[in-house]
Length: 74
Image 1 (cartoon, rainbow, N blue to C red):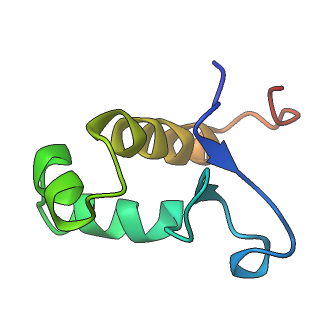
Image 2: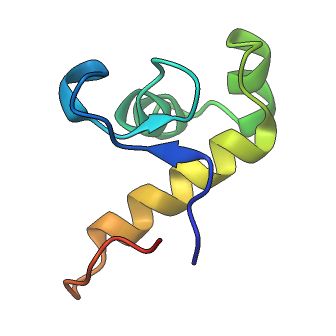
């Protein structure tokens, strides 16, 4: 899987994964999903995000939580 909407930059949000071009972290999006918000609600709350951004952040979180270790896909 390619995560073209997710960036990791040590100079942005202390190197936490963020949605590319924003300072919105994957962890923030995952917490909102965990609280019961839908992709649509999150995108409405943060207009700089698309529903695709939210979906890819969730997929990235799932990838990180997988049991297998592997290099970040490029």
